[in-house]
Length: 375
Image 1: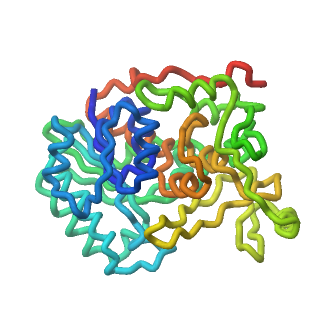
Image 2: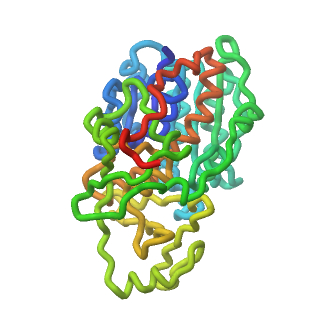
Image 3: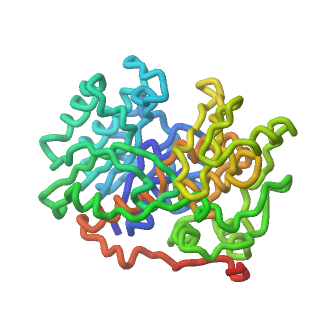
């Protein structure tokens, strides 16, 4: 069984993709208490460490891992490189990019994959990227940094990310960008992604009306050692959570109602989802350390309201049994910060093949849907 270390793990988008690719998340490192708690709940057999990697020696991560890992994955904080942020060259979080490669150099996995925002490839950021990659250039074959879109790998959202893959050619079969790009599949529309989810309510829990669709089957597979059993059992009985109502005034609802799908509501600047297209990138907002700003959520394409936590999770590619946080704010922030598990699985399966993992025996229990769902 190939062991994976997930750095800057968040709630576990990369970890879930790894598990579904036949790999075993053995250690997740995350600073945010809420995200790390969600990761721990959803990956009970993975060690979760709440650490500020900017203040931790790389060798300390190695001691937490124990045996040499097969794969290190992670997405260092990207606000300093993002097109929608301030793009501050002096943002201390920029140094965490270098920290990722420092840890890779120290614990020496057989392969690694880092993901980040496309702005990382701007000329102004070359100094950060070159310094980081040079830490591991003498040990690994490193593929050229490449921008990929999650929607091109079956996700229901447009989400462009840079990936950087490296591997030890002495112990890993050849990996090519062509193989990774060939793992693509048709995108999913918002209508397909949200099929069968109930309207929001005051109890946060609802009954699935329709779950037997290809996309819902894809995201709701259960994987050995992943998931809170209580949430999985509730899902198999036909129930989902994450449906808490967001209150809108009548005036706001009328503005939302008058906004066409695929258009932006002029006052709030909220975008209304188009049912026959993938969603735009879901935004995360900020944590308490950055002012607790809540990012704008998209407007549902049928109802005059913003999407629920469960709808955002469906769009991003998380299963209906995935447990986030009791509050909407933290849950949406986790989802917006995450890598789409669908995208992660597609890319990491290529790496798993190169690592010699039998991905046909990836411990998937099957296409499970609620037994009483209406087809």
